[in-house]
Image 1 (cartoon, rainbow, N blue to C red):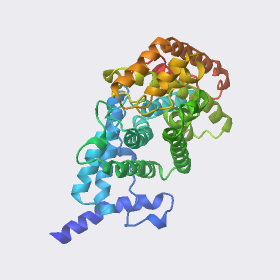
Image 2 (cartoon, rainbow, N blue to C red):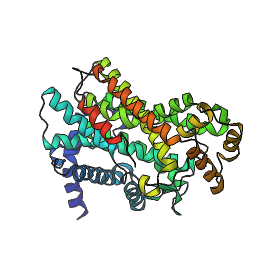
Image 3 (cartoon, rainbow, N blue to C red):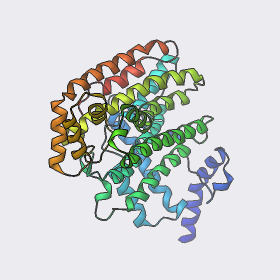
Image 4 (cartoon, rainbow, N blue to C red):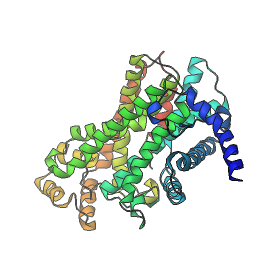
Length: 394
C-alpha cells in the first residue's frame, strides 16, 4: 500500500515539478523537488461581477488553502503548526473594508477598458490575488502595529496578540504573514516577465511604510513641540499613502505593461494627496468616532500620537497658555479623565469645523490634478478611489 501511494503521489507531483521548471530559475531555493508550486489558470474560480465581494473572498479562501497545502510537503510543518497558521490567517487577514484589495480589481478593469483589452472572469480572479497580497501586507503591518501601540481591538475583535495563547507569538506571526505575501507573488506570477516589478513594488512599499512607522513610534522620545503638521504629513505620507493608495494602482499598471515613468509619477502625486487626507480622516475618527463606526477603540491620545488634531491644536491654532498647558498635562496618558479633557478642548477649539475645511481643500487639490493624467490613465480610477474615502464616517 505504501509503495502504491508513493507512486500515486509522485504522479500527482509531476505536473507541479514541470510547472516549477517553467518559472524564473531559482536553483538556490528549488528544494525539495517541485518547488515552487504554481497555480494553473483553470484553478481560478470565475469572477462574478454581480457579487464582487463574494468573488473576492473566494480568492482568499483559495490562497489560504494553498498555503496550508504547501507547508507540510515543502517545509515539513507538523499538523499542529499548520492548524495555527490556518487560525491565524482567518483571524487577521479578513474583516476589514478591503478597499485596498478591491481597488486593484477596479483599476485593472478601468485600465482594460481604457486600453481596449478584454478580461476573462478567470483573468480578473487571478489579478484579485494581487488585491489580497495588499490585504495580507496590511494584515501583518496591523498585527505588529497593534503590539507597538498597545491597541485593544481591531476590526471588531480583540487584537490578535491579546489572545491568551498568542501574546508575543504574534510578533513572529506578523513576520510569517509578510513572507506569505512574497510566496503568493511567486506562486501566481513567478513566470511573468513583470514578476520582478511586482516584487520590487512590494519591497519598496513595505520599506516606505516601515519608514513611516519608525517616525511614528519614535514620537515617544520627542517633546510635544516636535509634533508639527509637517512632521505629521511626513509620517502619514510614508506610513499610509503609499501602501493604502498608490500600491493598488501601481500593481494594475505593472500587469498592463505600463512603463512610462511619468504615468507612475502622475498617479503617485494624486494618490499621495488622497492618502494624506485619508489619514487625517482616520485621526479625526480615532478621536470622535465610535467603536461601532471604526471597528476599534481609538487610542491616539493615550499613545501620544503625532496626530492631525493635536498638531493643528498645539502648533497652528492661537491657543491660550492655559490651553497649551492642559495639553501638556493630559496628552499621552492612559487615564480616562485626562483623555476626556483633551477631547473637550478639541471641541472647544471647534476642530471639527477646521477639519471639514481641510477636507474640502484636499478634495479641491485632488481635482486640480486631473489634467496631469488625461490621455495617460483613466480618471475613473481616481474617482472610484475618492468616492470610497471622501467624507467617510467609518
